[in-house]
Amino acid sequence: MASENIVQTAVQAGSFKTLVAAVQAARLADTLSGKGPFTVFAPTDAAFAKLPKGTLASLLKPENKAKLVSILTYHVVPGKVMAEDVMKLKNGTKVATVEGQTLTIRNKHGVHVNRAKVIKTDIECSNGVIHVIDSVLLPK
Image 1 (cartoon, rainbow, N blue to C red):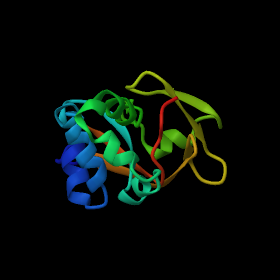
Image 2: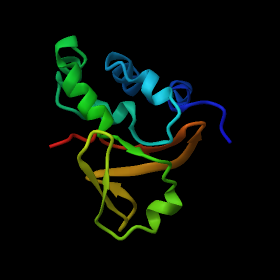
Image 3: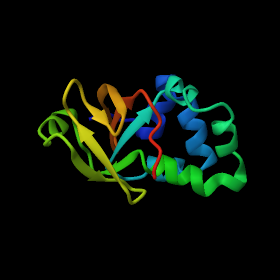
Image 4: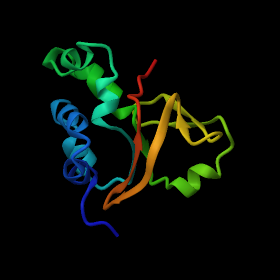
């Protein structure tokens, strides 16, 4: 069992600096450090860099905290869902997020969450699991 929680693991990985900064700005670090378990579809720094210019800077402003919280919690699914479990899902399965909307899981030609490709799976943490994705998921 991993001894580091989701936030600690993301900090140590070094490729989630933007995600960690966003989680801290949204004041979600305590939540994602909590008991869980959580499954986090974590966009890399490169994924955040694909957002339109100025989007991230705008989201990190205090007046946009609610929107940032919505986006970040859209990347979190309650429970610990390992890659093996995802592969058993029927293509097109919808899963509920902490944010309240659903994500669509596709497992043809690799695993995709909405339009984001899962590029690394099963980074186990003390309070859940991280799956790395190549794009930021945006709720409707």
